[in-house]
Image (cartoon, rainbow, N blue to C red):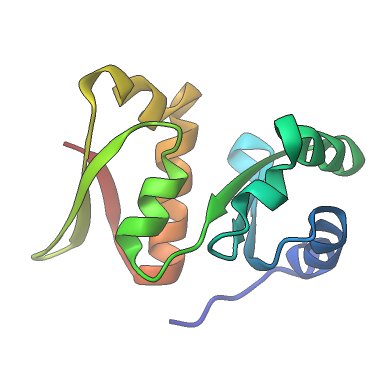
Length: 141
């Protein structure tokens, strides 16, 4: 699947990589929540966030917007689970009928965390799942 980057995203990627040392796989400007969704190479999430969140906070200050880092993975299930972190995701099942929908099982106590404030986390999962895996929706089961 081909992912198209905006001009602004193309300009931001080298800044993010320089600041974090992590490899950026995708960058989405999320106007609805005034943030960046940044997909980083698998295994580089800790590097992107930095010790105690130090690196991401400095980058947010520099860019004057919040950033949600999501770890890339070989499957839609991996990316969706990362987007819903820190919720404990037990299982992601993808159903292909008229639409392709990912159903996510989370610990009952983590449902609110998976959805996020104002739906931020579930929206990030939906956005990245659509961009990279052509999944129409992500639902908490």
